[in-house]
Image (cartoon, rainbow, N blue to C red; front, side):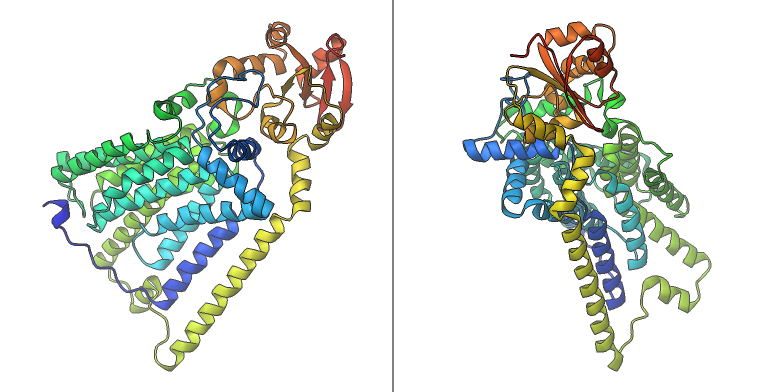
Length: 511
């Protein structure tokens, strides 16, 4: 049967109790996502956005570092950077934190729209998914990728499970994606895994609930091809296609950059990934029929990505939550068919316990009041965690704010700097006239610069030649870095010191 000829399945009516539970769950996700907007990469994104607004055109050449100064930079996040800069201009940390919380909540809400089953099941799955995804929530363009991945997933969900063809939305979504963040490859992976799963359904003739015909697969492939062309409509042109490959080919990523490393399952927060993965496969095993091939390939594919790099926790959560609800709902229906549940248990599971008649209006009023209280609490939390005094207090713990302020008061433009990797983004913002050695733009610096940085700060073999190669005359480092000890031994002058950072300068290059 052709996709366009299939009618959408009617949904069961949602009671006020279920609706309240879902609203409360979404508010809880917002509460989880409302946090102090600080990230090592946020600052260079803000600086790039400000420069784009000032110049009136996207910034496509590096002007922040001395190691890549003047080199072409595939700035795939230019539009997000403009949005971040405008938010910071208009509302400071409150606007940045609010946008971060809203985007994280929107991504999970789009996942919720793809869920099956009663509200209790959807809410439990969404909270679990939110805990998993929260690892990567931060004030960065990566949040745009999460929203757009969930949007692509919703388009595929409508097409497969509701028989509503909105595949024409894919090209504009991918066009927007290619200008907001380089993570558009996740969308193509989602479609690719789904296509592989549908081919598995057809090949093995699996008795699945929502099979797609060969013609339907051809239609999806056609819209996907058009989407691949629309991502070229951006200031970077063909260069945007290279972004996924440039990033993953940087060998130092997994070894030295935490978000690109494999999960640490000693961390209870990261253990939530295993809980979600186990819940999906346990539910699938209890369904009483084979899991849909597309659900299987999508979950397995994104689980592998998450096990390779923790920055993929969010994408995994967004695709796994809907699959979990579909499998769990089917498993419960299978149990009910074999051993019918008592009426009270069925009513509790389905959320059909709301009062009717005269008590209904009072119940709705209580529901609205409860939702209002939670929304007010969420807004209070957002205001509290974005209060400037609190933000700057946290900033002083994460970035060398005092050392940067000292350098701003004692500028030494003649000295080239080597800095901590995690501090590079902040220094780009705080010291606009002092080019950094490296920051979070791994696709720009590549193995050459990042590899040299590792040799230098670890005082590995050839560290002196590395500093000479880049004509480094000043170091802003953590006090216990091996390089700091070597510089002291070599007679470099200590210019500044606190419990967080030290600044050394080569006396031969000081004026």
